[in-house]
Length: 109
Image (cartoon, rainbow, N blue to C red; front, top):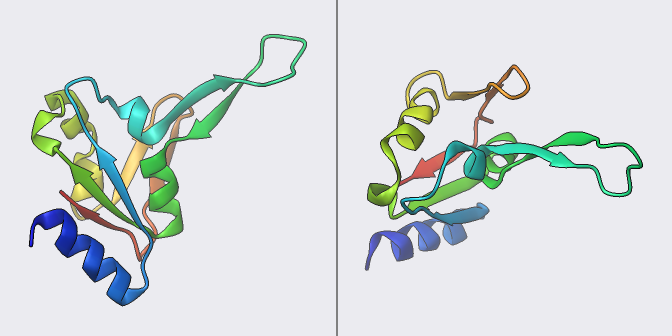
């Protein structure tokens, strides 16, 4: 069995939701954590923060498998340092907030 199949089987056996994210040379933190997006139907140019897939999983206590992490740019990986160490959090400079991962959140790479 490979890494992906092993993590998928473990998630299924434990009843955990698993999100698989494929990384590439173009992946940046905005892709993972979120960004300001235009508000649909707004008459004025308005933007609203929209959580990215990784951030949603962190908040919900899901499991995340980062596939092809070796392809991700160094800056993207460095932006995840606080999530991977004892702090288990990410800082979102666009909205000036720090978000802590739910206790059930797990990250596999």
